[in-house]
Amino acid sequence: MSRAYLGLGANIGNPSAQIEQALEHLSEHPLIAIGESSDMLVNPAWGKEDQPDFHNMVVEVETSLSPLELLDACLMIEDAMGRVRAEKWGPRLIDIDLIAYKLEEIQSERLTLPHPFAHEREFVMGPLRQIAPDVADWIEERSV
Image (cartoon, rainbow, N blue to C red; front, side, top):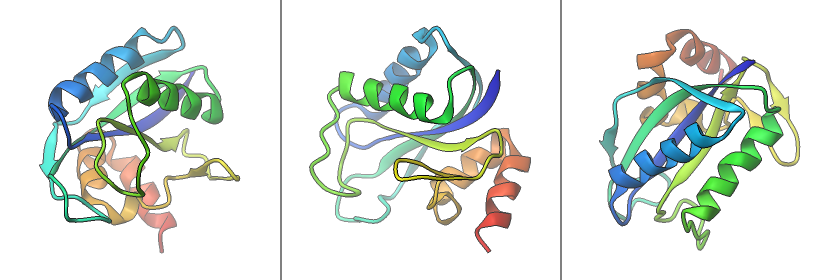
């Protein structure tokens, strides 16, 4: 099993309920087990600021999925929950980002790990520090 960290966020509809629903979907996946969870925080939008505040949290998962398979599972959950990708960094019903996987560095067409913007986003790094300060430090070391 491999340890990975996912960032969850939402800012339209009922954000906290949608994040809880995404966690239920993740926990129902036969190859994903949810571990530690951060507090859910409310934060201003990042990247495109003229939208409602986001609810965000980070969860640790144990999985036998590869990084790309885990990414695909997250995208399938987003799609099943009705996420529409209308604009970059725009409002969303749910967002599930793969932040880190086994402290591996990956650079491919579909996936960059650690997440390329994680170190710039306190709504990721703060919750990550709550549950995995060593992973947060590892990400920050790579952003220099």
